[in-house]
Length: 382
Image 1 (spheres, rainbow, N blue to C red):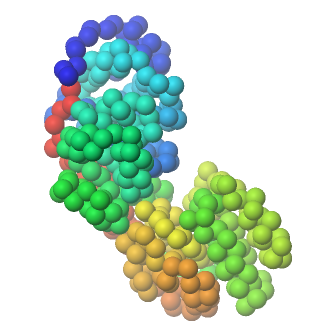
Image 2 (image 1 turned 60 degrees about the vertical axis):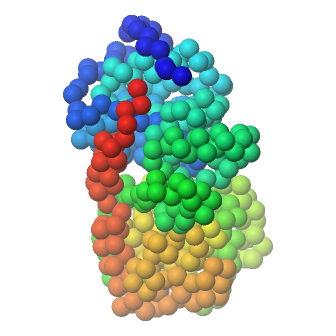
């Protein structure tokens, strides 16, 4: 179906975009393009991309308008160059057509949709530029149950590129959809916080920390059990848990039953400050598509100890930028933390190597450049 070209004035566009502000002037770029991104992850990941790649990066050809239509509603605030078509309670096809017509006035635009959004059914067969995979296509598989096999093949056939946040996710897609493996591209999430500096030794008394969602796959219970083992070896050890989630209450009760003094700080808006207080970051995840805490910890100079699960071995080089232990091996995890805390040369080595590794492989400017290059290779959608 060919999308009709509809002319709308400033008042109509303000009503559609729900901003009430005038449109920014058209700026000439190398190649006009509207990118449609479908993603299957949580809201934090796509917020990071929209903000750091498409909005705050002034040299990006896609900087002029960001559009988000998903089950959550708007994830970016309105502004002169930040528009949002809100479709969380279903969608108006005619408003959508007018909106697509409006996008022709812009030199660069990005539309972002979640796989759970109602608009997915409308867009899937015809106009998805990028499929951004955070969680191994889980949500897309659910959608395929609702579609027939033909529509599934047609959908992947119309997607120009499939962005995977790790080689682990890329391998999952290659097994499920080998026909389209040539379309995949791995773009690891970058560090968006300020880098600190390598550390020479832990504080006295030392602090170990867990940062993440309190859910079974992230292993908060395993961290508490690890803290119990370590507290017997280091009586003055401090333990910190940062984050929230469905298991927060049960974790607090569990730590009290075990008699372990753990500081639960809740969700933090400033993870960098939390990392400054933590000497060793412990990541007992049982599965991970990509763990941002590991990358951020290295950027702040904090050594990391983690289970070798999912994409974590892609981030951590064992005995070089951190220590890895087999997934589910609780006592080896505790021994690895003890080793880092008591072996000062090892502590300094892991801190320095991790800091350099994060700067070299998870660089924000290099990440933006890859998105720029990708945007200019896509076929214009409108």
